Image (tube, rainbow, N blue to C red; front, side):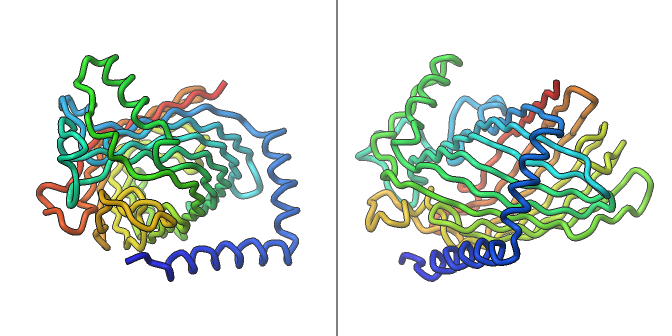
Length: 314
């Protein structure tokens, strides 16, 4: 069943956000802020990598790879920071067994899919620990995202077998996703420990979901994103899923024989270490994501992968 109400809600949300902003004159203010932050802020370059092969496994499965580049400009404002970011990302999804050929693939196995997207995000962080972000991603799902070529090149470099199922990947669809995140407060029960809850949501024809999470940090903490830090963290998260095109196929593709139904509630935890000094920063984390496919068992569908982030600030 196509969740028409979900897309209608997403489109209505977009209309309300932008029409309300225009009426209040906020779009003009944000454009001026964008120019000011890019002109006076500190620019940084960040590489993000998610990959299950980094756990020293010799196979790929489910969410198998994510790679992205982010250019971020961050400026000190009264009481905190404002950052504007441009990003380019590619996410790859495969079946449980990448040696299977297209005739042997089908539900409830994960369909082959690639999502290539560019994004613009505004993030505000206050000195008291609260903050928010809003952004938009525009891209392409399907063969146009170049997933087969990307994975083949990587597998040749690391001498790993080539996946055989990309001929059965989901169909092409242009996608737009609005995303928002809110951290209303940060608690600091002791000097070197803090706890930050957050609410987040994505709305569009590729992803429509909403969730709640909490992050516990311990170590030398930074109050603002551009400050030095060395800390360990644990993030717990749960989200309710209305639509996931990497499982169900594009919203405007009426039928796809490899599409599967999503699980409506998905949990995730991430444990890692973050270090940052003046010019360099790095994060290394282990991520455990719960099963996302309704008709697949939790034992089979849960995913493990390593997350790496490297940042350089000239």
